[in-house]
Structure formats: C-alpha cells, structure tokens
Length: 143
Image (cartoon, rainbow, N blue to C red; front, side):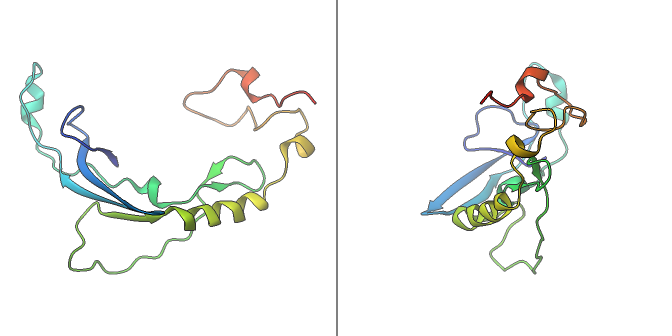
C-alpha cells in the first residue's frame, strides 16, 4: 500500500508512522511504527493482525512523461542490491535533484500536444481511468 504519516494521529489500519529527513535535495523516509491493533468504536480494529503497510515506492521513482501521450508512465529501470546492515523494511532514500534530471530527459522526448493532438486535447479521452475528469478538462487552451 505504501501509505505513511508523520505522527501517530489519523488513519492506522493501512499507514505506517515514519520519520522524514531532508538534507538539501536528499530525502530519507524511515518507518518508526507499523500497523497494529487499536481500540475504537469498530471492533474490527482490535482484530488487525498485520504489521506491514508496504513501501511508498512512488517517491523513489522520477516522473516519466510518456513520449507519445505525455502522461505519467513507469519507464524506469530498477537496480536491486543487497540491504545494508542498518537498512530496515520500508526505508527509502531519494535525491530529488537526480529525479528532476531524469524527468527533464524524458520531458524532452515528449511531443507537444499543441502540435500533434488531432482533436486539441491534452491526452486521449478513450484511455481507461478509474476516475475520469469531465471531457472539458482534456481540451487544450485556445490560441
């Protein structure tokens, strides 16, 4: 699921509590507390048996505009290495400056919707989406 929060307040069934560190463009996210049972008006919250809330992987991947549609896509390569002794499940490290460099590289490969869209829309309306914006939000601004 990869959801997280900075305090123990709020949603607890699916979110880990984390510590967020920043040094310039480098960010670190470390899990401080996982999911655990708790008392509430819903008796099912005491039946929580899982601890893991997943890893927030989206933060680790730079934005990759698709060269054809311009939409965000997952084109990245992934390198996997053995965990270090101090690494814990859910730990994340990101350098947002490096992510921005990747984004700029992919953005340079995209085609301008202004120039190539046959119907003057930002993206194909026919693509399946769980929550589809109204059709007028797909239109490009008039020149």
